[in-house]
Figure 1 (cartoon, rainbow, N blue to C red):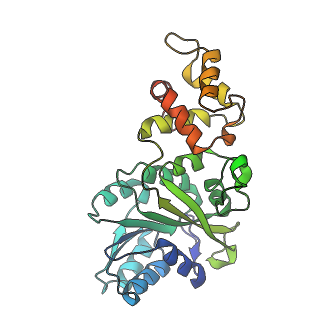
Figure 2: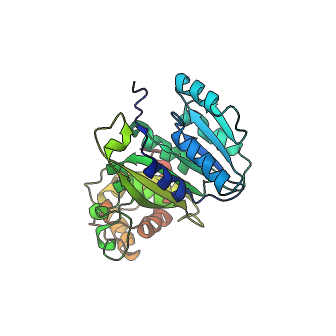
Figure 3: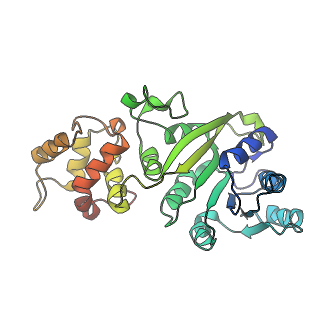
Amino acid sequence: MQRLGQHFLIDPAPLRCIVAALELKSGDVVVEIGAGHGELTEMLEREARSAKRPMRIVAIEKDRKLLQELKEKFSANLNVGIVEGDVLKLLTKLCSALHAPRFAITGNIPYYITGHLFRIIGALPTKPAVCVFTIQREVAERIVALPPRMTHSTSSGSSRAGRGMNRLAASIRFWAEPKIVQTIHRTAFNPPPAVDSAIVQLERLPRPAFTNAVAYDRTVAALFQQPRKTILNNLTAALDCGATGMPTKEKLAATLAATGVRPEDRPQDLSIELIVKIARCFGNELRETTKAGG
């Protein structure tokens, strides 16, 4: 029976691919989201034993029936901890209590929590060294998307990466480099979902794209509030141009042009570097005028 939107990945080949993409090291802690029947948990544990890499696995499961099965299955394994609960509510606290020099997050993620989960991970004070998720293929392709003019010179792991920058990609690329590792046909799951999936790896950047995360987030929210509008029109609305203390639309356009941003472009045309430039110029004002996550 399918519960909580779960489609269990049962093909061992992509499971092995996930383990390899985690690039695990001795002393790592792996947080697994939605452990289900424990197929990936078991493979992670075997990998640790065979490679003689001591590490801990913290498997989160919300479904109480599956939770009991997991506890029985791994009752004799001291390296596997089973945690009951909703990952969206407990992940931040759990990660802060890991006390590990390096940790990773993995799991087969239900579509309906993907965006919310990525926002939570992006807000963690200490980011995971790497995340490897199985997600809907279309969402994975959005995550690795780049501005059209960059797709000829940069490989992002997807042949459809030229669809342009979007809010999800911009938010993730602030702290991680995303890559599609492998696509997975729907028949690898039980029950099979309606669409194909992909394994996506998010590797933490040595340093974030910009030190002011609040200003960056507000800038991304303002730029992609209405993606079909121009950069100039979105920022004009977000900054309430013409109001007391705010720049005029003409001055805003001139400032954008001076930083290398074409005001008439759409948000999808922006690179992360250009978004950072906009955040440097207008982040403080956007902090007051743009709702978080708006």
